[in-house]
Length: 122
Image 1 (cartoon, rainbow, N blue to C red):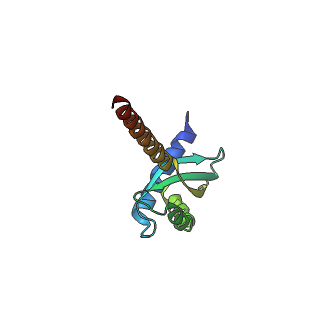
Image 2: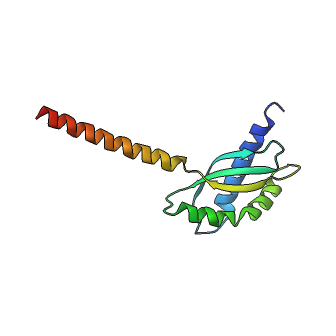
Image 3: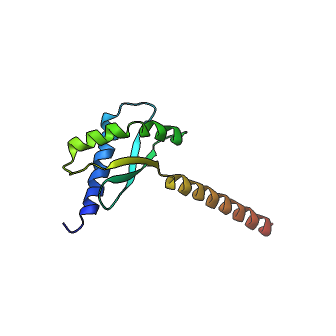
């Protein structure tokens, strides 16, 4: 029982991802990636950070997913051997969007530096 919370988080993430990908048949949600799960110390509450593949409007998709939190929790209760299945909150993980934006800014900076070098060499 050295790292019980870590094991519970990993199992929750794996099972929630499986439920979202295989059991939920809502086309308005699409493909989901579970990036991280944070669990309270007493395992009664879990924040599930997700992203959507190819989503133009991810916040609308997260609202659709929030409507299914009860279904995901009940399905999770059937799959896991926990005394109490945690209350689930889905949160859109914006880290990938931020990383894309940083990459765009770095590419723009590179282009500006290249154009300045070209002007300097002329």
